[in-house]
Length: 260
Ligand SMILES: C[S@@+](CC[C@H](N)C(=O)[O-])C[C@H]1O[C@@H](n2cnc3c(N)ncnc32)[C@H](O)[C@@H]1O
Image (cartoon, rainbow, N blue to C red):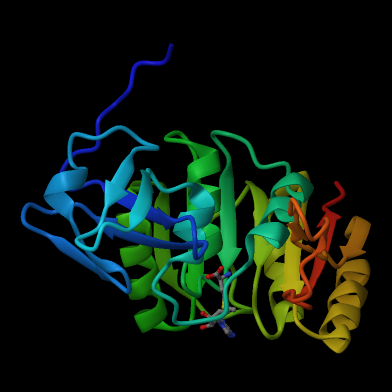
């Protein structure tokens, strides 16, 4: 059986309310308290427990404690912008063939949600170069990466879309910008031959213009998709069926590869 590593002060934990399907992410501090709608949870009572343990609030409500997953980290960033959702992020990871040790350019750092996933996947030997035109967003994203313990793998820099990237021969470029076509030519110059560019845009007009620019520039193997995700209710008595509410649309996803 796997050796259990007990939860300790200064690490992040996720408290899960099974009944309300809600979770809270926070750092364990000596004497700390988490206020919930079902009473207080004392940090001191979580320290020393193993993941998956039961935690009782001051009113006796039942919670479970875990170390946060990368999805928890992405969804619970301090949000200053729209973020890339996990369902789309997963497609991008495959489309760009993300692996340990890769050197990646990201433009449109935003809140750093997607940066967190990339930074986890490239491992300690990889590097993410992330660019944004807003210094305040870069600062906030850096803080989010720091909370996830991944800031050492990321270089944050101020840059305007259209300017050439200060790194070359990269393994992938990801663009999350209102006008991604402006950054396609600099992306071509920065990418190693055969490697991928990926783009997310919220409208069909942006999708069309991005694809046309990719073709004009000489990119190939162009793919364009939209990912729909439906939660399924699995119930004993009422039957199994999709949940009636869903996030209807998050963006159009594009990927393409640079030719020699
Ligand atoms: C939707 S957010 C990116 C979200 C990010 N992918 C995430 O998951 O958190 C778009 C970002 O693009 C940046 N941006 C917009 N126009 C830009 C430009 N011309 N040059 C550089 N960055 C730009 C914005 O400041 C914003 O932070």
